[in-house]
Image 1 (cartoon, helix red, strand yellow):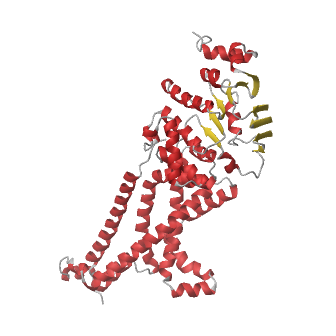
Image 2 (cartoon, one colour; image 1 turned 45 degrees about the vertical axis):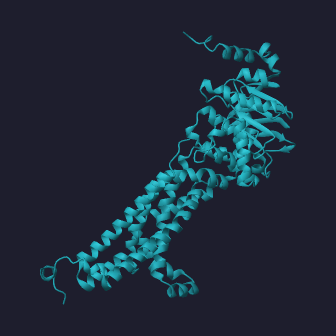
Image 3 (cartoon, one colour; image 1 turned 90 degrees about the vertical axis):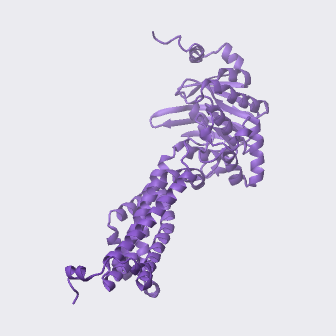
Amino acid sequence: MLPNRAARQSCMPDFDPALVLAGPYHDLLVSGLKLSLQLLAITFVLSLPLATIVALLRLSPLRALRWFGCAYVESIRNVPLLAHMLFWYFGAPELYPESVKHWLYAMNIEAISAVIALTLYTSAFMSEDIRSGIRAVPAVQFEAGRAMGFGFLATMRLVILPQATRVTVPPLISQTLNLWKGTSIATVIGVSELMYQAAQVESASFRSFEAFVFATLAYLSVSLLITGAASWYQHRYPVRPT
Amino acid sequence: MIEIEKVNKWFGSYHALVDISESVGKGEVVVVCGPSGSGKSTLIRTLNRLEPIRSGRILIDCHDIHRPGLDINAFRSRIGFVFQQFNLFPHLDVLGNCTLAPIRLRGLKPAEARERALALLDRVGLVHKAHAYPAELSGGQQQRVAIARALAMQPPLMLFDEPTSALDPEMVGEVLAVMRDLARDGMTMVCVTHEMGFAREVADRVIFMDEGRVLERATPDAFFNSPQHPRAQQFLSDIRSPFAGAPG
C-alpha cells in the first residue's frame, strides 16, 4: 500500500537536490531531456520546410493548390495536439500496410508517431506565420524579381522569402516554444521523454518535488535558449525597410 | 526592335489600351507622355508582359512576347525594367542587388559579376555605396542603383516607367543624367516620363497618349513647339503652368 499524501509528506526528508543531480534518477531525467530535445530538433527541421510548402500552396496562383493548403491548415490546427498524438499512435498504424507496420514496430514507434503528430501540428501553425510574412513583403518586390527574369519559385526563394523570414521570426519563435512544450504531450503515448521520465522518477522515489523541479527548470532553460537564439538572429538579420 | 500591332487591353470593363500600334527601332529613344490614367504605364508594362493583353501582338526582336509557351523568364532577362518606386531588394546591399541576376540567371562567377557591377556603379557615380543597403540611400541614389542593376544583365532594351516621378525635385537631375548618358551610348529606350526637358533633349520621338489611345507622335521639336492634337496642346499648357487652370 502506498502511504497517503499527508503521511508521505510528514515522513519525507527535506528537499534534496543531490538526488536529481547525480545517480540513477539523474540519468533517467537526463535521458528524458535528451529525447525531448531530439523530438524538438527533428520536428523543427521537418516542420519548417513543410510549413513553407503549405504557405506557398496557399499563395499559389492555382485554385486547387490554394484549396489544398487551406484544407491542410484548417483540418490540423483545429484539433488538439493530444488528439493528434493519440491518433498517430493508436489510430493510424491500423491503416498502414503490413510491411510498414513491421518496420515501425521494430523502430521506436512511440517516438516516430510523436514526431509525425508534432510535425503536422506545428507546420500548420507555422505555415500561417510564413504566409503572413510573405504577404508583408510588398507585391512590387515580387514584380521586380519577375521583371528581371526570375520565375515564380526563384523569385520566392531569392527575393521574397529572405525578406519574409525576417518578419516571420518572432511568431515562428513562439511556435517553436509551443513545439518545445508540446513535446511533453508525447508522454501520453509512452515516449520516454522528459515528462515521462520525471513521472517515472516520481513514482519510483516519491520525490515529486525534485523530479518536477528538474523538469520545470529544464523546460524553462531550453525555452530561454530558444528566445535568446531568436534575438541573436534578429540582431544579425534585421528587418530592412523597403 | 519593338513592333506593337493593334494591341488592346481591358481592366474589367475599362478599355485601357485601344488599338495601339507603334514601332521602336534599334537605338531609338522614345518618350511616352500623357495625363495620368492615359495608359502609358500600362503600355510599357505590356512590353515585358508584366500586364497581359487582350488582343494584338507585341514583337520584340521578332518574337511575339505574349505568345503562350514562350520562355518569358529568358525574355525578361534581356529587357531592363526600371520602376517608379525603384524596387531594390532591401535585404541585399547595393552590390548584392546588382549581382543577383547576373549570377543566378547568366551564370556569371561572383567575381566577374562583382567586377561588372562595380563598373556600372562607377558609371552611375555610386561605387562608394557598393556596400550600403537600399534604405541607407536617397531616392535618387536608389534609382541610379536600380538602373545599374538592370544594366548588369546587359539588356539591348531598357524600359523606364516614370523613373523620376517618386523623387524629390533635387534628385531628378542625377537620374536623368544617367539616362541621358545611356541614350548617348546608343541604348534602345522607351521612357514613360513627364520630364519634358529630358524628352526635348534626348528623345528621338515623343508619343502622346490619352484615354488608352496614341493621339500624337512627333519629333520632340514638333511636339513641343506645335502640338497638333487639342488634348496634347492642353496637356503641354497644363504641365508648363500647373496653376493656370486651378480654381481660386
